Length: 274
Ligand code: ZN
Image (cartoon, rainbow, N blue to C red; front, side):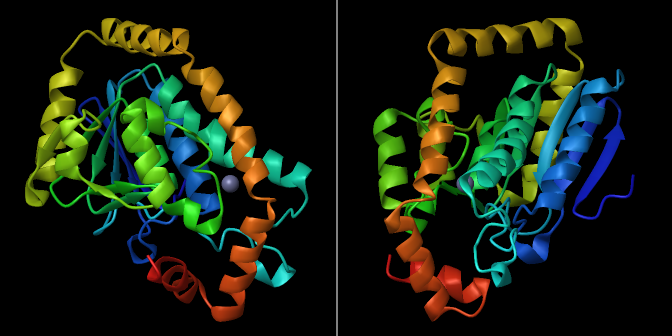
């Protein structure tokens, strides 16, 4: 398959999926989510692949979902402006496809530089390990759009609950060094060494016995499930979708539309006052 929005390569047991919309700060549109899904399914099936790297082209890991995902001209941010349609779309594209990484049998390493926010944060944290460049910034600013976090609520599982509340309520980012202090990332490396260091980690893991590695991943994930991981993440999805329909969210969106003629303006209006 010819990919438009990602790069996909397999070499020496390592599959690398690279989000490739650098001019859009790797904003994830429907196409990108579909293509990433196809690549992850292939990497899972291909017996020669031992480890997967999720990387990003350009200066930014990912700025989140592309707000142009749904055509604004139709009079609604969402292509299917009813609860049922939105529920199904988000469940498929923003939840099930994203959660696949977590459930894959093979280990996945996120290679993160620059902004890793909103759905970018969500995607990186579905990976088993994270290598961050020293310029990486993590956060989830969707409170500024009146949304209760992103769809996959990994936040209180990957940072301490108090930090999760700080990030989510203020919409501010935390830098790589701080993320390292509470164990959200495995390693912080100079930006220019990011690719090399991530590859070295992947090569190390590729030498380990593959079935044992997959059993270890399974057991750690099952331990988290005993603590309620999948259950709580599923229940937040409903809270998130509900939050799209509040008066607060609608007012914020309407105000932004009145003040902005394009997405760039929308974002600068949204974030400017913070
Ligand atoms: Zn949503």
